[in-house]
Image 1 (spheres, rainbow, N blue to C red):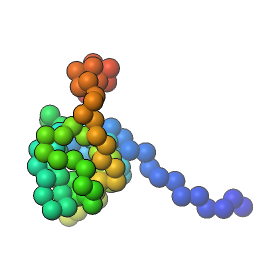
Image 2 (spheres, rainbow, N blue to C red):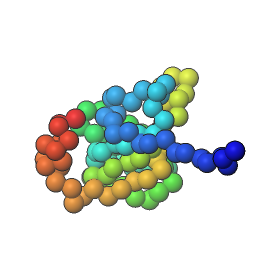
Image 3 (cartoon, rainbow, N blue to C red):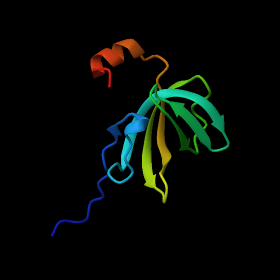
Image 4 (cartoon, helix red, strand yellow):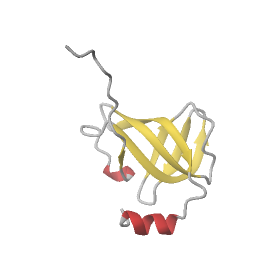
Length: 103
């Protein structure tokens, strides 16, 4: 018998408005931080906005970021908990959208 191995679910690239807490476990969001509070950042991906709970000090207002987050279903809606916040300030957003097919 093989020993148990923990497998982490892949983080799927999503627009915030397309997140489904019944199906999505981990998501990857690309956007701009529009606000930062105590333990939370607000990210706008150009289609919608979301509050993301974080322990990190990365991501100040105006920063372009990619967030890998766990989707936690709630009774009404969901909560996003950041696992990784990556600085994307050097990303050519127009070229990215062209290559990604304008998600």
